[in-house]
Image (cartoon, rainbow, N blue to C red):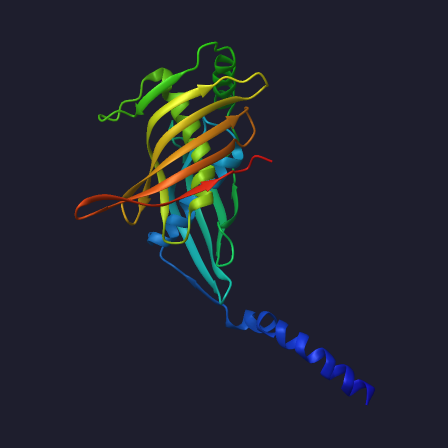
Length: 264
């Protein structure tokens, strides 16, 4: 009798847990073509996240080729991608080996959970030296560095502003990770304007107004991004973005998004 009462008392809890307890049987997992848009998005997002964690603006990586991709669908939770791909340094096109990553788009989470490992993506000494030299130069500034329209309409970036561009890419790697949802992908397109923020501590900082390019809509997203950085550490970033999408009569502005970022 006592056993039956105990079983009935526990039954509601068991029923609540049941979908999660048995859901693994309903998971579906399948290989997808490496050149599939979803596979490429997962790989590019993984390398973007890797760039953010690396904290190096002179060794930003990009995807060279996706070799393998698998998709696992977890009902009522999300979709998880496993991708293997080769990567190279954006600035030099030097191959850095094979990367493997999981990218989990969870329905109840605002941004994907990512785990990425690149077999030989060690920061090269030259990149580390270049990071430190730029940092030292910016720390010595008494007049803030400024710039606009980087790159210009011909794709040209003044040599002295190239590290400022790379730092924007490093900073927006956090923004892209934070904003990306499955099927919506972002890349940095252009810096509208930038101004250095002089600080008295050991960090350097810049305020950027820039455009992100969004796929598949092919629209531009206008963002204000504040980046605080020290060599070897992920940048501290906060940002505010306004979605601009084009229709038949021109541009319309949708609700923006603001994030206090990772300032903790």
